[in-house]
Length: 121
Image (cartoon, rainbow, N blue to C red; front, side, top):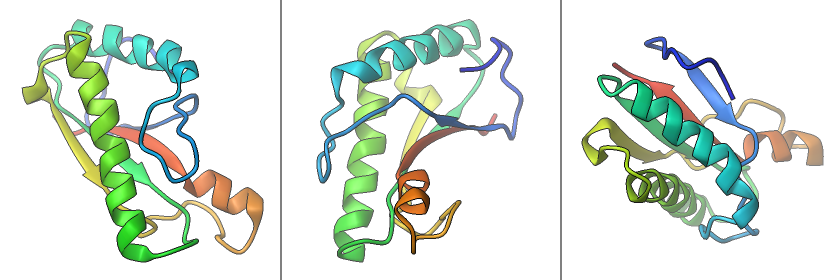
């Protein structure tokens, strides 16, 4: 994931956070990565982070926005349930509005479907 020191402004893509298509239910294989994030956040109690959900551009934009928000919220809920302060976390859904790759290809769409966290403080 990353070193234990959080740098303000750093944005990290969570590579091993998984959901079924169209779902915001975290898949069990996500828990290892999220467990590492719990540890890092507990070791940096003064940090504030934004969990962001992103989708590809396939399908309805409004539905994608809601899905990305619900996915970010699912990650936040997992972190809080595992002892991270809710006050340290914000959950934001961006839908397809912040692509990192070309939505015209399967590979690009896969890169755009992601969960990130950004150190805001």
